[in-house]
Image 1 (tube, each protein chain N blue to C red):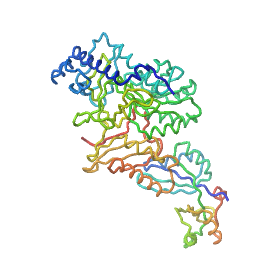
Image 2 (image 1 turned 135 degrees about the horizontal axis):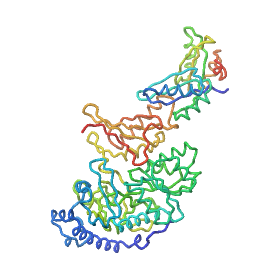
Image 3 (image 1 turned 90 degrees about the horizontal axis):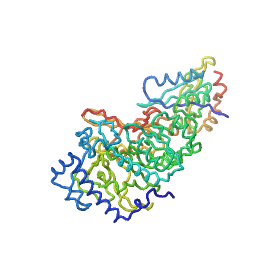
Image 4 (image 1 turned 135 degrees about the vertical axis):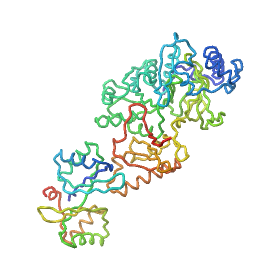
Length: 434
Length: 144
């Protein structure tokens, strides 16, 4: 099977890995204290000094950092490195409130590329591969991040970005693309367009791997993609605040490896802020251990996941996080019940009569929250007997209720009516007035 | 015996959808012999008998409609009171279930034509044949 990019680090015995983390944690705490006015102030408020951090466990003495801190200190108030050392900026879109700016030193770009080089190697890619980067280039971290990672392993990069889907498919065939990186929803769109063009991804292309992320997606969607195209679909994770896309599953597909020499991972109960045990769901908290322009201490990304610290059967010792269950920001509260769009997706993708595209509309009927799930009916799901279609609707409702514990209205819609996305899919429209 | 192919379409219940179906067929020069719309709230099913079902199926599919072909019977009815009764009664007595039915009157033949979707098409054919009910062929529908 696939090898390692940096076998020494990737297979490092846990004891050594923890010692390395401890060293780096102490360094980064000292570094931000000395270089970032924001952190010096924060540490003072929390009554903690760099000298108090003696072991890994002492990390809990440190204050949290939140997205709002980045916004409040827009654009570069939290940076630890002087501008002369910054070689790049990325800026998040800022759909809610102000955008956030992240910066990179030359070394930060190196670390980022190294992280993805390990990840891409772990899914079996090497210098013989052609990697089509279908993430947006520019201020968004997806395109350039994957680009640098794939170049680092010596793969040929096809920097197509998003959109131009027919051209993407032609290039995929002409240049023998073996791996594609994009959002899972955009790949579903590529599959649909390929079919219309009479191109079978399975038979007419050399595609063998997909690196899909930047939005939560379910195991059921993975199965659909893999079954339909014959490729292996891997989950990639990261967020701009910690550099961008950084980590993927390995070829074993049992969790996303978080490189422990670069990041210290905690999973906490979002209500009590206490750590949760391995195998329990909680909020992901990262401390950057090897980042210099914008190091972050105990950064609460807001993603919910489950951690597994056991070494993986692939031989890597670094901890894994399970598929992201949702971002706390994405969570809908409907009639007091928490609903994650990813739960809806996992239900829908198990039902063969339901197409690959769907959306959730939330509204109010009088005082009551109403959730409507709009799904496209597949050709094979269509019966010309109204009774069969009504039964299908009822069945989808029932399956949703079984998982979500709330009733959802189901609308069957014609194929092609739900908007397709090139980047992150917008699955939810909330029409409730707050 | 080749059966008559009915074309069925899944359509959302919103303005302009039926017009789009009609326009697609009209542009392709396909003639609609009979049509019925069954609606169920937010969506409906359009069922049609066309002069050229294969072509109609293809153009609708090419225009991204969700479409299927179903075997149906086209039965000639006397256009007088009791015409329908005679047919459905004999099917009922023989335990053939009618899933749905719709009728139209032909201008030339001055006869009413009943389109039937049944759960057992071979049996329906036999039962109606015994009663001397005339069942139209594909060619006859085409030639109306």
